[in-house]
Length: 406
Image (cartoon, rainbow, N blue to C red):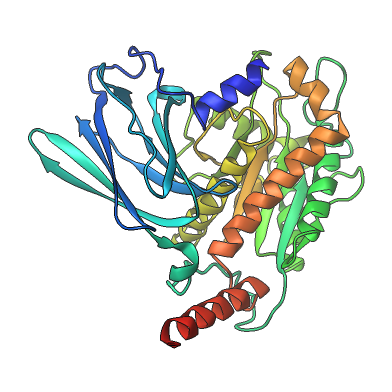
């Protein structure tokens, strides 16, 4: 029950009850007011009046349809009032996220496109969020295509996702207080994830390992390449000294260093996995430093976009420790032509999470959420030559035909 309440406050929120002390550092911004205006039967505009300097991150979620705006290092003004539901907006909620981020959630009556822009005036900045036509009506907008180098230009093939169960064989990974081994948990979740992926039309999963075996980090990447994977996802359940720490998080390869000290430590810990299996530090291979070139930087950007969808999906399963995608120098993610992410499903060092990780029900819930996030990403960013791309073209053609038919 406590976790459920915490989760609802993070994403869906309660009516705005945010402690005013949150994010009130010297440089914190302040959300002073928010107005909502209908623009016809299928559009709306939302204006956020912000005092001070902050960035903004806007993304959408499904089931139910929502638009989410994150404002880092921002708190609410004492007299802030949440606008009532209006038109296409069924509800407005505001809640505090970790590290001083303020989250605004617009729950919609149907899925709509969303875009945002900053304006200034009267000593404040105004973030104008425009909710436009239904998503189906703008399906012909050019998507951000993501294709592995080996992908054919046209066709109706399935998207191939390499699912990597962390650790294995002589490398047990982290071990929980109750004796649960990470390598066993990751294999169980990876198998469930493959099942969930294969159950969704247009996607096909390939396991880097389907038994208790040791794989070098480079071999994991190599197996993904040989499978012609469009996406690589590595599943983990690490430990940390503080047993109270809990929650899932998703990582992509770092360009400019780790996003936190914990992320740096985690990457170093995972990168040393080859040593357990007898790979010598002087051997060339997976233990080489993570060097980033321009091509890989582009792939990292694609990986982060996909990872955002997975983070959002995991929020529906349990506590998410980091609401934003994290970055660190994981060697297993350093493919130069396959978008990749690493999912920390939970911390096995936390007694409650260890217990949940051992259950087939929770393993399936995690797998279904990750698969749903991946499918959402590929639907919006279909690689060339795939069924997703073909369905996008057909939808676009149908919309065009409907528009010209009297």
